[in-house]
Image 1: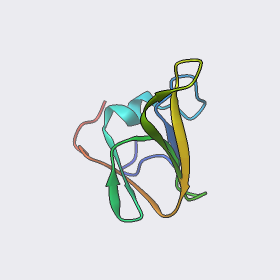
Image 2: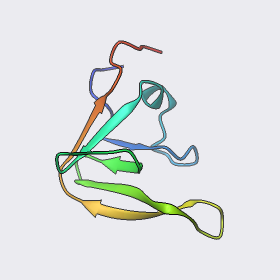
Image 3: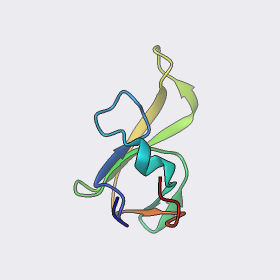
Image 4: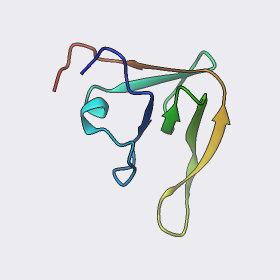
Amino acid sequence: MTDMPPDRLSVDPRSPYYDEAALARDVGIRFKGVEKTNVEEYCVSENWVRVSVGNSKDRRGNPLTLKLTGTVEPYFRNPSAQP
């Protein structure tokens, strides 16, 4: 694994962009220069994040998300933890 998080990552295990090894290293997201803790999915190359909206759920029990566009900066909070 490299020192940079993947270009696109999702916390949903059903997503093709789910990467358990990267998530185990505790990925942090800075969006437009502000630390975000409610990010469900991000894409650096397309400049967007999906953030959960409160505690709301859809009819399947998944969190409701909102897609925001802007500069995305992912990083590993704990770079020394190698799985």
